Length: 196
Image 1: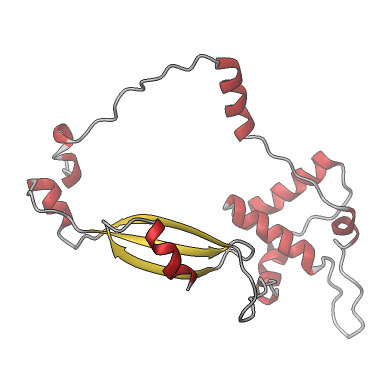
Image 2 (image 1 turned 60 degrees about the horizontal axis):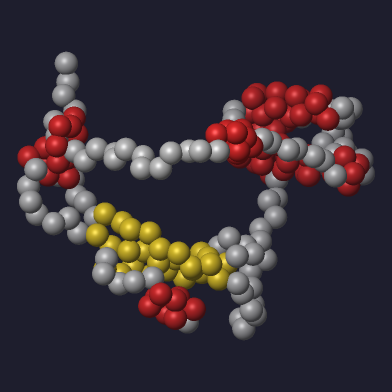
């Protein structure tokens, strides 16, 4: 039976402390947990009208589905991490629930059209244009190939940590600035350099 290195220190690991507060409003708490799993799906009238492809004027086969339909299917696939056949089934069930009489693209069409589909990219900002910047930071632990030996033998050396400060454009979601500092640098002091 193989022994995993991280299981050797199981008895000396910190345990999760018991919850100090008791939930008194169980009905609201239970309803909020159910609400987390709620999913609302709707199709606009423009999306329903644009689901079918426009007729082609050049020789060759006629496409059945517009690029909007293929992009919608591939977006659902990416969001829910589905295979192509599962994506086909999900779209079919959504159409059935919404009562829409639209054709569902099959998995081979999705695969073939995904290769040539042009995905709209967010517009990049020009120099000097105002941007809303979201700033956050996260801690990073630096470790090497022998990190599990430290866990196994419990050496007392300090592990080095760094902080990654990120500035992200609120409209496009693109990371426009990043700084890597030591662990003792606070977040507020790095806002100025990120804005620069």
